[in-house]
Length: 431
Image 1 (cartoon, rainbow, N blue to C red):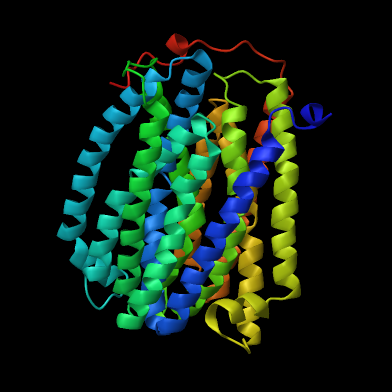
Image 2: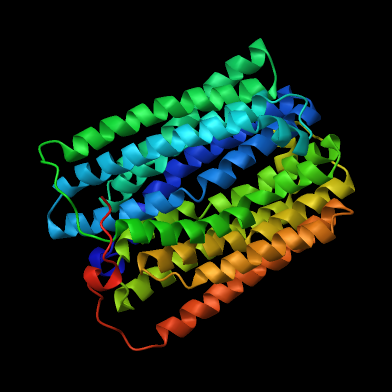
């Protein structure tokens, strides 16, 4: 009976990863609470802006996690685990080159960027560039574990360092409360997390000889990069835009509400991670994949709906728990509720784009890119108040979700097609 209900393991693995993710979410929220209570509103605005800059650059690199998960899953099904060592090796060398360019460009252009974000010095941005360079390697490791369906190692790779960061930032805030110390704590914990991931990778590939994999990963990675790049703008650009257009005090208040709102987007991410390797195909519309997607959507409705409902009922509670604001103003509560509502569709969008990427379909790229452009233009023309930016955000996030949903429904109405061979998809070798 259990097998018929959860034959793919979606529910079982989702519950496991969801529970472990909640440990990380609590650690992330406590990190925000420690920094939010220790820093001035202006300093917290700087930290939030740099963390969002880190997110907006790291999110497209989820394309690498997705590509690794896709090809590792197929490698494991084909019984060729030696290909994993080859993939990790060549992409590690590529990432080292990208990381060097990122750091060099960051230090070269730190002055103009600091002026754009109204920073008093360039150090926060320079540190953030180093963090971006380090973060590049995390999705490489996580994607490998995800594709192999080693969800314990997925959890260790993604979550353990967030717990370490909490302890480190607490000590750093006692020594010298500043945005720079908050960023330094993030970097030190991230380095520890990468070491844990390297050990997991060593255990996964132990005893196998390196072997070149099938063609197509380079092409798949680039298509995924474009799609997730557009999603990153929709998900993370808000605080950066506010930091540019508004006074640092207002930007700090907005950052507090946005941090709470963004937690709604993060809730369904474990479900998307678990679903992805279970619906892998080479372009076919698969009946079992449809069923898995439907189950995942129901789980996301439950999670996102519950989170939004809780904020509607008790909007003062997260502000008090995270920032010690016992008596938030009516304007702050209105901003929080509206932000949570505007961000909620992105939780569904994240699940749907993971389904599309697993099915090797990338038509959603144009839709999300169009919404991202509309978002930036909308904020450029309407930014007299913080609420105007939230209204623009809500319009584009709902458009992206509904458009993607209609696209998938129309695709699934078509008769099932045979899978496409790799040689027909791409003739590019990842090497």
